[in-house]
Length: 300
Image (tube, rainbow, N blue to C red; front, side, top):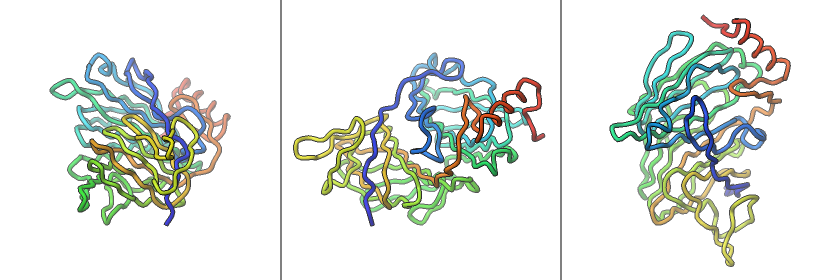
């Protein structure tokens, strides 16, 4: 077994999307190779409804899958195929946009006005870019959770882990999407298949994603003290891992909670503008031309 070293640690950046939603972007609209098959991760977390109520009105998608995970509040959604629904606390929606869909997502806070969730974009290979759109709406109670003897808890949204399999099925990149909590000062090693790209996104507490017995330098903000011991990685930080078949995390004094996401690289050309991701510029131009002439929606 080999511990994955860290390639980089990135702090999510404030941005505004939709009709004025304030959020934090962990990665996206940049070099896609290191995160392949994933394209973007947004953390929408606000206590003030004025920062999210305008939502994400009608917009198109083609060539990707969007994964929405709600931790508090709710997201009302609808689309051009007539689907309607609401994602509540703990719920997940895995939408395969495929050949094309128009939809909207409108966040609603909880009783105290709080809204928190994530949206991850996953690419589709060329063979599935024009597949029929599909939804997988998963209620929180159907997501299995496993608890280890040391108190580590893992919600298995997609893929298999510690004998449990998440309810999301048939996704092209065969991803594993986990919500992990490690208690204060506990050190855990978690398996990640060596054939996958993998990252962790911290959203509660802090910890160190290192094998303390083998410190190495990393590319961006990570620094160690004079002994080579790594500093803690905190809230809203993304850890991109290098190759290996497991990761090690040492939780800080308040514990640590993070998304652990991995997937098989597609390794195809990416032509990307806004909410549409294709393989070539010609395909991208065609998609936007179809938006203009009304032929964008292929599936009825």
